[in-house]
Length: 80
Image 1 (tube, rainbow, N blue to C red):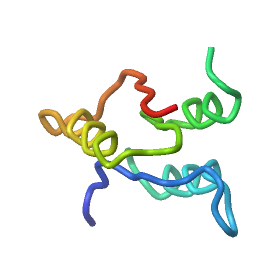
Image 2 (image 1 turned 90 degrees about the horizontal axis):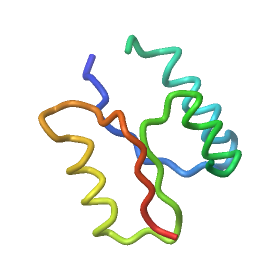
Image 3 (image 1 turned 30 degrees about the vertical axis):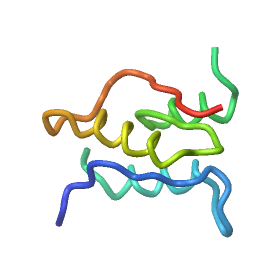
Image 4 (image 1 turned 135 degrees about the vertical axis):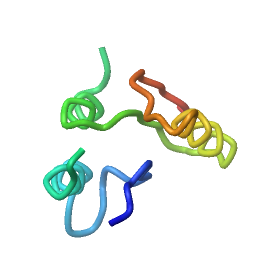
């Protein structure tokens, strides 16, 4: 199968939370912040952005994550 390089998702979705989605992705893969963001980072999320998002924020994050084909290990917060 294809290797996933980046997933952009909302924390609050119909039918499951972002935590549940992240857990499912991690199970099927081989591979001082607010509590919700900290939990996502603890579960393995690499980065986060806060709403409202601007297209330029998403483009900048994508470029940041895709540098040299390597996932970023740092923490980056964009938005408000």
